[in-house]
Image (cartoon, one colour):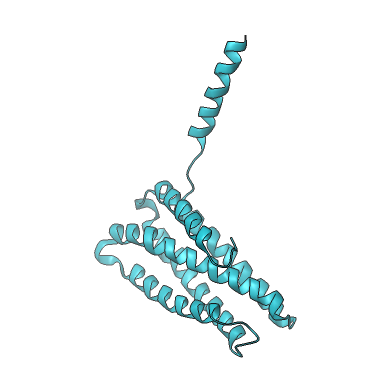
Length: 176
């Protein structure tokens, strides 16, 4: 009897391992979009409540960390795969690259300051939120539907998960 039960445990464990499905890359990216949108709303509420730096700054830092990580995995993993699928019709990816560059500029300005040091800090967060909202609508409404059926979303999802963990481990703010 003992032999059977010890034999059953490894096979049950092996089944669990093989049943674990890699996340869908598009679902992962859309989850990031949702999380950042919620952080922007949280920040906006703090601005309306005239909160101080101690309350606003950690949210702004988390927004910056999440957006930087998200942009990096898209640029390193998702966009090259999308570009390959789209071929000559990769205008959407080109636009997304340019949008990322502008967002990164705003993120760098936010990371170099704080609400009390910069009269435009709250305005920069608001503009970044509007910019990201536009970018998300294009990705979710146009890019993802165009490339979703042609990509190995599980393989890309696995690569994105691994890379995000590496980036978040190196993030200076310590937020994840």
